[in-house]
Amino acid sequence: MQHLQEGTPVFHHIMPLQIRFNDVDKFGHVNNTIYFQFYDTAKTNYIAEVCPDVDWEHIAIVVVHIESEFYSQVKSTDHIAARTRVSELGHKSFHLAQDVIDVDTQEVKCSCSSVMVLYDLDRKQTIPLPDDWREAISSYDHLDE
Image (cartoon, one colour):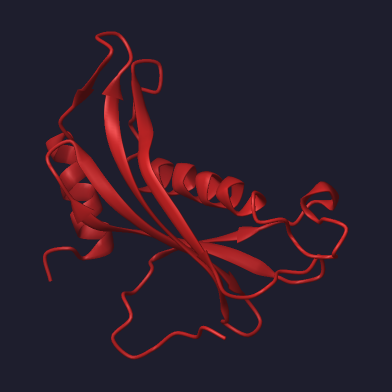
C-alpha cells in the first residue's frame, strides 16, 4: 500500500475522477488501460488551469514517453482523484508526475511519469515552451524552490 510519505512532492492540482460502468472489468476493478484516460483527462485539466491561453488549433502537447506503476486495485465504488504536477521543465519538453489516489484513504493506487513536448501543428515540428508557460508552471508547482 502506497501512502504519502515525508518529502513527497506536493501536488497542487487534484482532480476528482468519475468511474464509469465501462471502466470496470469482469474482475470488478478498473481496467489498467483506463488509468491512461484518467491521466490524460487530468493533464488536460492541469494545462487548462495553469496555462489557460493555449491555442489548441495550432499547438498540441504530445506524449513522447509514458510509464505507469500499479500498486492496488480501484473498485467501482471507490472515490478517486488524479494528482498532477510538472516535475521538470526542459527547452521543448516537460515531465509530468501523476497518480491516482483513493480520496477517502489517501492511498496511492497507481503512479505515472511522462514526458511531453509541444508541437506546432502548422509547421509540423516541435517548438520551445513559451516563457509565459514556463513562468506559470514554475509558479504553480513551485519549481524554483
